[in-house]
Length: 161
Image (cartoon, rainbow, N blue to C red; front, side, top):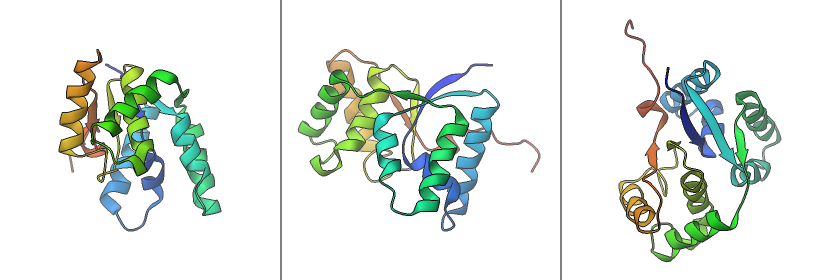
């Protein structure tokens, strides 16, 4: 079995606990089940850890941090190359300056040569413009394309309903 090296963006740790998006919740939970089964090698970053730690709601914060611990994700360190690439994404207008952390997520996965990002951030990450324009920049500065997917696009579905 191929084990893909995936970057879990911050939304992946939130959606298993939401009540208002049952399909996203189910798909995200299935993703974590597949991580535990060895289908994916999970990575995340210090940027995600910071965002989780900034969560105001205590129980949700604890649940998300516990999920991070339980899934065994390797935490990528912040770095100059990541920040440089993220700054290019922002300077080129792919990610708005106010949402620089979203650029840092994409850059962290790219610089660390992961297979793809899994996210439910439709505003700045899982977006056709972002996917196309980060690919162009990545090639220009010497990196490969980074896949950006929602959980439903990467999880397996049972053949028998």
